[in-house]
Image (tube, rainbow, N blue to C red):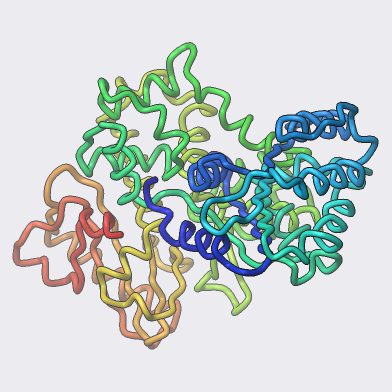
Amino acid sequence: MVGRKEEIKILEDCSESNKPEFLALYGRRRVGKTYLIKEFFHETFSFYATGVQNGNTKEQLKAFRESLIKYGDEERSIPNDWFEAFSRLQKLLEKDDVRRDYRAGKRVIFLDELPWMDRARSDFKSALDYFWNAWGSAKKDVFLIVCGSATTWVIKNIINDTGGFYNRITKQIHLLPFSLNECEQFLLQNNIEFTRKQIVESYMVFGGIPYYLDYFDRRYSIEQNIDILFFHENSPFKYEFKTLFSSLFKNSEQYVSIVREIFSRKRGVTRQELLDSGKTVTGKELTGCLESLEQCGFIRKYRDFAQKKNGCRYQLIDPFCLFHLAFLESGKTDSWLNYINTPGYHSWSGLAFENVCLLHTKQIKHALGITGISSWEYSWSSRKSSPGVQIDLLIDRKDDVINICETKFTENEFEITAAYEKDLRRKVEVFREETGSEKSLQLTMISFSGIKHNAYKNVVVHDLTGEELFAR
């Protein structure tokens, strides 16, 4: 299994503990949650069941019945309600011949896509609550794993629940997309040998989502793979954007509307700007949608340096969504092979590389030697200067230093000219003047192919290349 070392350690600790364990696993759809659990346990569960997408309560109970039968339940009828379903599960788990995990003999129960099981006006949550509190929590050899792509549901109803599940979760795992390093390992495991530049290009489009990377065909270049997966007549990802949101959210169109509006403002948007657009829901509903999108990893919320202390902006950061909206929904091109190396492509790749860097601030901080220093990351635009100033990425550190980062995605070493050096110095001056920051400002260049050595290079304090982004 590629990566996931911290997550595997948590699963090992739970499997070998001498107490009951209740683990909540959540993360973006397609990130590999089910794969992680099935691979770790080699599918040797005491019981496994998954929810049915868009299924009503009867359909959920019918599917649960099929799982009960598979694991040895002799009762063939569909449970009348979830209390009966979990009662039958308890009897099944109490059998002498129940399958146990080989590590410490625990009875492992894996309930996948839990949010789909909880339909409106059903007694699912109450029944699960009763099953755990009245039985599971008293059994030292029980390991219950619940999983869901609807991240907000899991956080609200299980992890942060103030009712029956309050303080009942013993462990939680937020499964994140692969890093560039993990993507490289995954591709090599699939016998795909891309250069690191090509892996970065793939990340610009697919992010670190294993499910998407698994579609790559090693016979083709990254450009050919993108063309086949998105732009051919029967391409598998043509409708993935719609499927992604409809599988996660009820009334998914209101979430898509918010994502589209945030996408239209490349550097992020305030909540008030979303309200002023008239294209999204309002009030508490908007607040809830933004929170859900952030928890699912589609957007990020960051502090606006130029606003008052509590000011913040929302920015779309999911590479797959960014690519879909930029090219498939817009109809900008119908052939990736024809689009590459055009001015539009270079403009897009520059912005996409910025996003890759933003998603790898952990690696950037490691390269800068500031891993242990708390920081905030955001972009910044001047509001007063003419011409305007835009800073790709700011790392605002607790040690009174701000790294002003410039990102460049070029084939060869990037050359800082006299004019560009002047522009960089002006950026620092304008930032200092408009923000009033008294911190030390350090120009940091993240150029994939490095910087060409010349008389103007010294304006940069830190010079990072694409290699640093591949750190573990």
